[in-house]
Length: 119
Image (cartoon, rainbow, N blue to C red; front, side):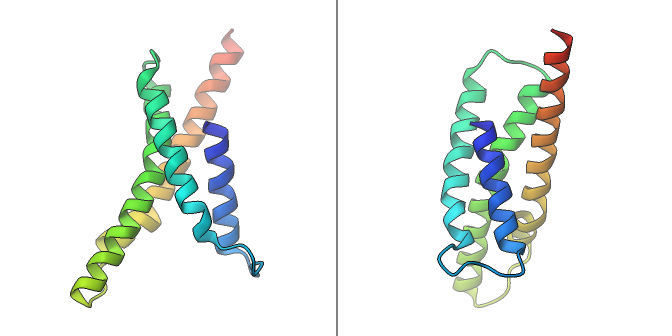
């Protein structure tokens, strides 16, 4: 589940920042997939008997795409209701959540690699 989330995240970032976008693919298609994969990763991580830093990093990795989708939704709702540009949820969605995802994913990979090397 973790690797599926990392791959979908990477694809969505590449498509959003690509110089050209294929007309048939829209980056917004990946958002519901990221949300569902994040929920699944959170549930699986909470249900496991894992403890320590690896569990925290996996929780951050799963919570970040969920937060991204929720904050984008809240930003659009508030902007539409009050007819103004809302900056807090926008900043959380575009800066904090992707950085949180990268920190969680890289931390999980490093800790898992150390654990495998120790065994």
